[in-house]
Length: 362
Image (tube, rainbow, N blue to C red):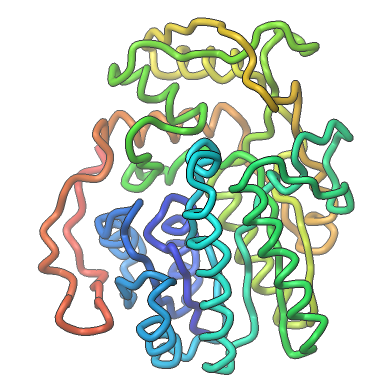
């Protein structure tokens, strides 16, 4: 089976590509490397000992995209590629609609031309907006409250309408919560560009000394310690959810939706305390005013994924923090700038060999 992964060099994408390779599947990656590094793919194939083809293509480049998808002839697509910063989406909404929605439309048209009609879409719990109807279930009304979340909602709706018009399509919309952690080797992990948008990578950068303190937005919520509670899920559990959904679609047409979360929440202070304890480093923080639109708690009801996919989150907060800290401490500045000789840039396909010398994991 050949699987095409868009955004496969990114944080969640790279961990999913690794699991696909370890399952013996053939993998091709499309990524424009605007928010990711080809070094992540080099390390992935080194860990797996398997090869892959990568295509340095933007989803807005319709001609090269269609050429690549028709050349790959995938049996299925896992679609991660997209912009994902909520704050940036508010200040640059057109950029997000063009990149995320139009890019997905281009991908679907290319898939249709290549006669591939199976897709696992990387959606988000942001489609639920600021709902306080907890735990969040797949039938909780969708009410995205920012441009990023609305791009995910619009894509979900586009996929639903596509499946209604053509019964050959097999579609999974995976709404996941807060991915954290890293591969246990410490070789791949989250490498945010600039100031991290999410809590745990920010905390990790404070622990490593790159940033001075964590701003905690709100300390007077009706939670156990007054700080916001969120559902964190280990990136390896999340990757496994994509493989489970892909397997499910082999025998199921139409659109299927699953929440991928732990079903429990951790507060901001619990995350900070866990990082300080496990890293042995000080993690200073300051409680500031709440941010508009933030809710006190948000966590999934993951039972449908357990029943349908046989999937559940296996790793708890301690493991998430341990793996995140291992990645951060071994890679304090993220992925290094690397020479591109191992990518055949004169060809459409960028072949990456599994016979790669990797950094030490000691």
